[in-house]
Length: 155
Image (cartoon, rainbow, N blue to C red; front, top):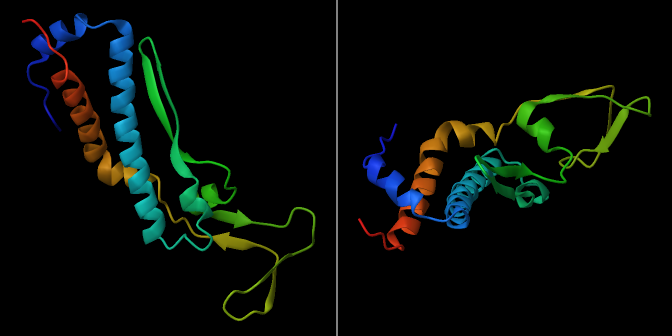
C-alpha cells in the first residue's frame, strides 16, 4: 500500500484552491484511473477470448464521472450488451417463450437444440480490480501530482 507523504502541506495547498479547481483536479484523477481500469477490462476480455463480434469489448468504457461535494465516482463498465453479465458471472440460459433453445453451431454449421445451456463464468471486470487496483490508484495519484505541479503555491 502506498503511503502519502507531506499530507500537511498538501492540505494547506488544497485549502488555497477554489472548489471548482478541486473538483476539476479530482475529476481528472478519477478519469485517469477509470480509463486505465477500462483498458485492463478490455485486456481481460481479449484474454478470455470473448471477441467474436467485438461488441462486448467495444462497449467497455467510462460512462460517467461525477464530483459533487464530498461525493466522487466514475462508472466504468459494459453498456448495451445483454450478454456481458452472463460472461462475467456465468449462469444458465433457458428458453422464455419457445420449448427449446436453438442456434447454429459456428464450427459445424449444424442446428443445435437444447433445453438449457450453462455458460461458465469468464470474468473480465473483477480480475481487473483484483490484479490492477494499485496501478489504477497510481494513475489517479499521478494525475493529482501533475495537476498540483502545474500550479504555483506560495508556501
